[in-house]
Length: 122
Image (cartoon, rainbow, N blue to C red; front, side, top):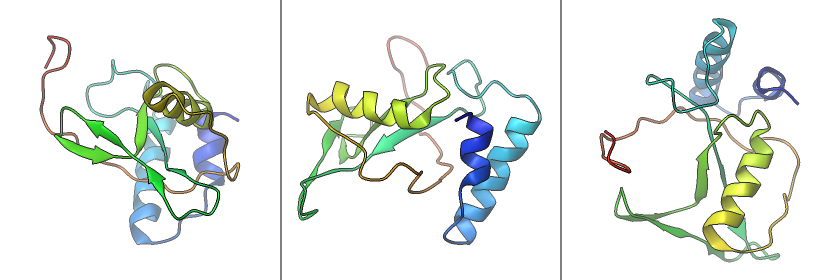
């Protein structure tokens, strides 16, 4: 599924997701390159919550830049299939064998990123 198809098919759960979806669709419609970090204004990432089968426990990872625990996730790095990105990041960050509990996107958010240095770049 293309990025446009993925975001277009998503049914927002609330006003925040409705607005964020419109922002994403507008950027896609302008032809912005959103799948790599080359876009300094915005780019796509994908995340996953890893739970046990009973969904009573969650596996978190420590985020060095933000000095906090978080769910797994990372940059699309050119990959248009955000599900594949979420699975790749979950495996890379935890070493766990994971699968999607459901095939559709669970939520949409636009998030700000605090200024930081990474690999010698701002």
